[in-house]
Image (cartoon, rainbow, N blue to C red; front, side, top):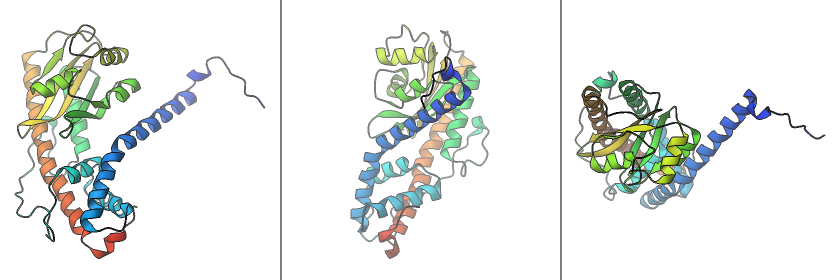
Length: 288
């Protein structure tokens, strides 16, 4: 039997839900594709270091530590690749490591900063930034120190095309890249005429309904560890001094917390991974 096309069928609620589901699957597949080389590299390092039976056992170790400490697999794999290996036969990966209390996050009204997960902090800083700037559109990015670029982590009110295009931002061609390079807030009053954007980036932003933007670096340990961006549906003047000061304070608080997270929670996960990998039963571990 041949289905008959009905005019307007693509506008039905069921069809919109299916399109949203398919777009979600595409985003997931793209994330897997971008993460696979890094995770494979971490698997190879772990397999060689701990004399594991195969890559599956190495992946299982990463997965166990990721789940136990509620850390993204990519974040953990990146740490395995980037950090110096533990000494041969050492019981600890980071012996004598100094531990520091979690920084305060008063601007986000988060009390237990030692237990909150990174995703919740990123959602909170995005919400706080959109409140300060009175907009409904924005996104948060995390710095990839190996490449010098920014990975998109959280977003609100932005189109699927925007999210796909800006999934990863390099070191130039956008206002967030400029803010990262200069380590200072950057306001783009009119996206249509601002020279900072490449033409592809400009077109994607405008098509998403953003006509202006403001980028706030998240500063910790003397460097940019992330970026939060507010987008507006109209050209805007410069932000008020009170807004800039509030954004700067929030950006520094969150940046300090993210730097603490990297040197505390991520390293705790690596210590757990190291201890688990040295157990004979883990040589043939399997993912859950």
